[in-house]
Each structure stands twice: as C-alpha cells, then as structure tokens.
Length: 602
Image (cartoon, rainbow, N blue to C red):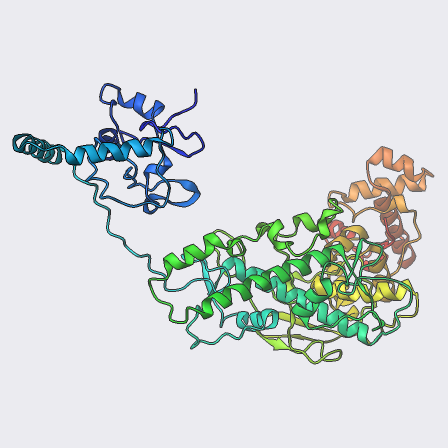
C-alpha cells in the first residue's frame, strides 16, 4: 500500500519523509505528532512505520543534498488552519498551495470570508477564544533551538583538488612547483595568497604526469635526430611497435601532447604520427589532471584572501564540480577521449588505480609512498640536463640505489653508457647516450635498439658492460657455482650473456656432457670413499656403475680421478698432502679451482 501524507495531501508525485526516530529524537518526534491531527491514539512504532509527511510542508532551509532533511527539520508550511499557525512563523514558500477542492471553490471561500466579516462578534465569545489561544500557546512545545554554527577552520587545502584535513606536501618541496609549472603553466609563489600545498594523491599524480612529459620529450629529442624514419610505424613516446596504435590527429591527442610537453605534431615532420594504446591512456590522464589543476586555480584566483571561513565554500565547490573529486576515476581520467571504448582488452582500464600508480623511476627515485603512514620514501632533488644532447630542457636525473642494480632481461652486454658517478648517498646517476644508435629506413632491428635503450632508462636498469662483467665475475668467484641459470637470474640477464662474460675472462670449459655437470663435491666424501672410487675405476668399472655402488655423483668421480692422476704424475707412491691431516685433505678436494668448473648453459 503506497504511503500518503499525514496532512491529507493528495499529490502522489512528491517526496515523502518519515517521522523522526522517537528514541533518538524524542522532542522533534513529539513536535511532528502535535502538528498532525489524529495521531495521539497510535503508538510510536506505528507512526514511525506507517505515517509520512510530504516535502511541500518543509522550507528550503531545512533541506540538504539529495532531497533529504536536516536534523532540525520541522514541517512549517501549508499546515491545516485549525493548528497553531504561529509555530510556522508564516514562512512564505514559492510552491503553490495544494487545493483538494474544485476550481470554483475559490469563489465560495471568498463569500464565506465576506459573511464572516459582516457577522457581529460577541465580546464574551471573543474573550473565550483569546483564552483558548493563550492556553494553546502555553501548552505547545517550545520551538527547537538550532545549534550555533561553528565554522570549520581551514588553514591549508590542496591547490589542485581543494581537499583539506589530509596529508599535505608543500609545493616548494621535491620540485613540485616546477612540475606544476611544466604541466599547467601555473607559477606558484609564496606571496600569491593561494594555498601552497597539494594532497598526497595529487602529488603522486603530478609526479606521474611530469615523468610522462620527460619521457615524451626525451624520445622526441632522439627522433628529431633521426628524421625520415622509414615505413615502420612506432609509438612516438615509447617507440613500441606491433601493438595497437592511435593516430595523434585523433581524439585530440596531438593537442594533449602539445599542452603537456610543448611538442608540436605535424603530419609532414617526418616523425612517427602514432602513439600506442598505453601511452594514449597516460597522455589522457595527464591532460585530465592538467585540466583539473587549471580549473581549480581559476577558482582560487577569485579568492585571494583565503581565511579560516573558507570551508563551506570549498565544500560547495567540491560538491558541485565533478572534476574536483579527490579520486580521479577511470571515467573522469579519460573524459576527453574514447580511446578505451573500442578495445576492452587493452591495459587502459587498469591504469588509474590509486594503489597502482605507475612508478616512473627515470624521473624520481620513488614516487610518494602511499602506505599507511604515508611518509615519503625517498626523493632526489638534484637537477641535471641529461637530454641536453637532444633538446635544451631541464629534467630530473635518473637515480637508483646501488644495492638495487639490475639489468633488463632484454638488455645486451654491449650497452654503451657514459658518465656514471657514485654520489655521497650511494646513488648512481646514469646519463644515457645514443652515440651507437642509428635508425636505418625500415630497419626494425635498429628501432629495437633505440626502444631497448629507452626502456632501460625507464626501468632504471642501465650500467656499463665493464661494470656488469666485474660484478658477474666477482659473484662467480664468491659462490663458486657452475649453474649459469641461477647466476643469470640473480642479475636479471640471460645465461648466454653470463657465458660470454666468463669466456672473455679466460675461464675454461670442461669437455664433459651437460648431464654430468653438478655442484662441487659434497664435504662428506672422506678418504675411504675416495680410495674406493679410485679402486673401482682401476678395476675397469664404468662411471654409471660407480655411481650406483657408491652414491657419488659423476662430476665428483671425475674430480677424484683427475686429482689421483695428477698426484701420480708428480711423485708415484706419494701424495701432495701427506703431511696434512685427512680432514684438511678432504676439504681441499671439495674446493676446486674455478678454472676447472664447467660454465656451459644447463
């Protein structure tokens, strides 16, 4: 059964409000009941569950968002004439009064008023009515007193999304002001009277947009030197090919690229006219962030004298402007394009998750850490000009921790990098040069070489070939291991690169089969077991038979036999370790020279 207004209004297309909770708001509940006739006989639960009051009986000052009522709302408009109209304080309303009678009833009402005016009034009757009204006023509950308004103190708010009471970072720290100027063109000054902070989320997104800008400018500088790229189409930002592409002339991508990086795209400039689907998504996200920052700055320019009474206005702006929501959702981030609409399988749908902000290590050691403590993990504020060879701009250098050096799996051992220095904080600053990179027409191999170097910068994985060789050889001597796959996995390179490094260093290969390669001889092999292996070998037993009889591996049998032959050639009948204890002799058998290890790939 549909609800009806307790005052008897017949309009069904109006919002209905339930009575206040009698347990939480007993005074306001009684006030509502007193304003409606015929509810005294009902219980509180029946009134709460079955009775409603329509929205036309409430003034606008009692409404909040989404057509809801405030905690102090009381029906004051269009009440029945026999109730206490003094409680309504004659509040006017722009809404028309609902009349249940026929249209001609207005004339009859006027006639009744004229008749009432012409009828003489007895003084005794008048006094009785006055007394009843006075008693009614005394018995009626007092109006609810509104709580005094206490403004929220807002000393600092985010300059981009207007959030307050959250973790903030000063724009003068970590080069955030320079990033904001590069992306939006907004100059930040401490004396401009506008907020000087950004929230932790906007700081992370600003850092990601700045890293994307740096990547695009770096790649464009490379391509400017390599005009006439040929028939091969690749992404203009990351140089990817054989992936889904979008023309820069579509979806306003060229305008976005110009707004973010200042790079003008022309169809006749001889450079690639496409971007891959991932770079298109990141470009759209950076453009949306830029638009959000410029919109907010325009609002704040009208509020130069920011004070403690600004909280209500900020809340109003955030509620009425969708772009100022604190979290950029996927729909808002890609509002200006429809790139991800045609292909739901691409990676655009997962780019803007707050817990998965891209970690652009080629720009910053680590983007703001969004952990529970929300502390900054690390920043490097040193500026350098690592792409001055290609274009005159200032960017943030590529910094990594020395203990985290790794090589990309697709990297080769002949990567040429110059000017690698170790600063006082044990951070390596790598400057990528492209002296050996040349792009021939239609030559995909050369394009792969350029793309590999760009990916190496992005993955923070660039070291010299000499440094790599030194580290591999040092580690090989420490672990004395002949299993190349584990060593290659430790450094993040292929086993073939490790094998080439060891070959160039002069280490020998043992001419044994691949299945015979084992680790060093277990220390449990004592002199008695060693003599048994030698005796079985002298008796003509095969290696497989010795393995079955003794349990010693094939590689261990080979080592024992080679050592015995060497000792026999030196001095027959004597051993080189006769003056040493047996336990030391057994230990020496287990630690063999590195040159005797096999370094073939398993």
